[in-house]
Length: 266
Image: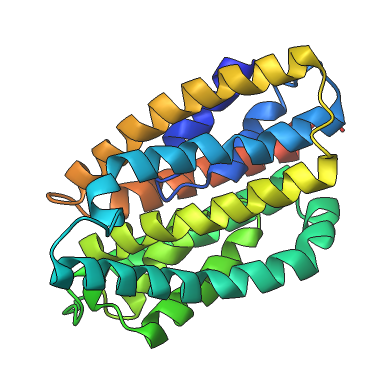
């Protein structure tokens, strides 16, 4: 079950289809036997190794030291923009974390968010637009902050952190490639903050078996996420995001149909 959930996390985290939404849905049929407390912690902590996959994949682009001055300064400047973009999620995440977990983590909310996000993604890609920002380093502080507010929408399960930040970036004039890369880079502080908060909340009081399960899930999700990042970077060179939008819509309708006729267990 841990392997299945970790594969789902690794595949869906950086695609604009909502990893949290998929995990909530898959967990309906693949519940961990370690209890709801560990399951909830696992769903959050498994984001950390997927974040590491981004760090490893983009390491030459992210590590500024030991490089020519102009390259180093450009990378440091990019990091300051990433920090600015992270601030809205940090503030609203702390304020709304408990409410979201208690009221929004259910299949109906996930399906609705999947559907609306899919419609917006298809609509955005069908519009004729001319990007004004072609390169991720050219994203200014104002756009970075605005993307950060778009990221806050991903607190609704099923919205997708990747989708909200990519849609936000493209809607604000960034090219598809620039929006995707900024979304990837913004994932680093966001996931690090979420997993750190979860570790503080749980106190890391896991049994040896639970630590072993978390380690197994981390290895699997890291490997799958690395392949997923490489796939998406290659995909956007030749395709747009409409296929992901249609997938979200189809999945949402399937979930709503299941929820209507069968229902999900508590």
